[in-house]
Image 1 (spheres, rainbow, N blue to C red):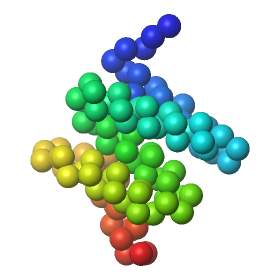
Image 2 (tube, one colour):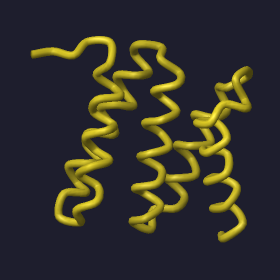
Image 3 (cartoon, rainbow, N blue to C red):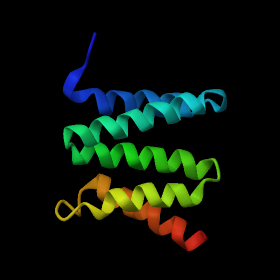
Length: 102
């Protein structure tokens, strides 16, 4: 069946599980891209941030550092409130750590 409003988060969680298997990271990436797309269509900023964070972590782990930084920075740029919530703090921390390394 369909999952409607929570589809982006369900796709993201499923992708997180797949990402732990190196042979299934391509599938995980496809699910995360779909999650990101759906969350943007729905205007679900929190799920967009979660999808972007998961996708960025996957890309960073695969050596795609610039793409990881870009997707996360673009998503964070849209946040003007809720800046102390756990998801925003985590995304900022990842981004700051990646900038220090590069």
